[in-house]
Image (cartoon, rainbow over the protein chains, first blue to last red):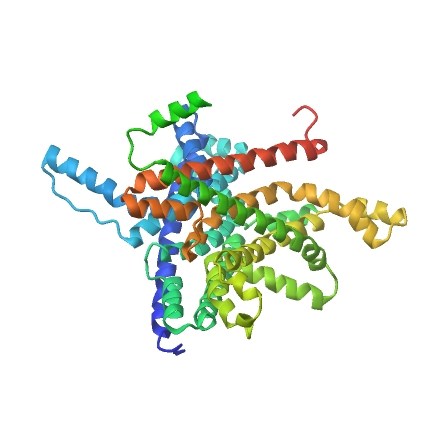
Length: 238
Length: 243
């Protein structure tokens, strides 16, 4: 166990918080991304408009500003809503926007916009003939999505998703600014207490690089999984 | 002008947050943000061009250190790099006795160094990719004309690589603008810093942060349209004939 003047264990706890924030916001971003992509590809103009507005606005404003808006403003907004619920319907609930929720929701929302663009391009890259073939077999549109569109779309989407995930991972460092004790915040606190920035910041940087390397490996594995049948075909064609 | 002034005063009459005083903070913040982003982009660009050329070198002792630099700076959060430089400069042996100390004491310069090194790493990789994507035929043609390596770089490879890199570089500029928001963490009064100050003073998160978000949005669109214009001018030869 590396002690780091007693900050070692806390730094590891912080690393766990970083990973939790990153994975939860990834989940939210993937769901929002799929929704955005289907809204953008839908024929209904209203869905299209809303999705475009969402991706444009989110990608035009710094992540830190959005996070602060949600963290400092979110509680006021939620309180107004619960007050309204209380006076209108006599429903008494209390929702607390803490640093963790604000961080996950903001990062998820931001990367949902980026994921949406990635998914949209990937869905468009799936040949129409495939979907028509599915229809010819009498598949329902949900079955077509699950068995034909999604697996083939993932092949095109994975490189983009991998990139987005790397950027997302680094963005989690911002939650330290609104007060969540991730590893960056703990390292910053330790630095202020001991005046040894290199001792704490360099291990944190190495942990980030480690997580990035592990995810690169996972993305490569997934790539292999979703590329099944394509690699060999290309070789034969050449 | 007077009418405009009167209209503006009237508009601001019934609010207590956006007074001339507060707007002054935002204006100063806009100044610092633009200065920080512009300077780091310019210096980063000047560093990135030679680095990108050297990154494609065949010699391992040139190639690997540059790869390591871009790998580390692209693989870790900018916030970590900022903290390292902001808290770390004090520990450079004997720096407090030199003239540099007066400069580095201000948070602006450590932030500028961190941003510059960060954007230089990303830009190096962008240009490296663009240089690598040069069509083989162009290089062979240049060789057939008897061009030296330096001349080929200057006349054939770099001009077309710059053009190819333009869309990706535009993204990097926007990314840098957004990343600059973290300068407020190390006490710099940039746009975000001004918003945090206004929020803390009036406890009005929506006014403070939505206003600053709108400013960032305008800046982002300005950069977007600038690059779209440049692309239209410089990449005209790549457009489909009927497009």
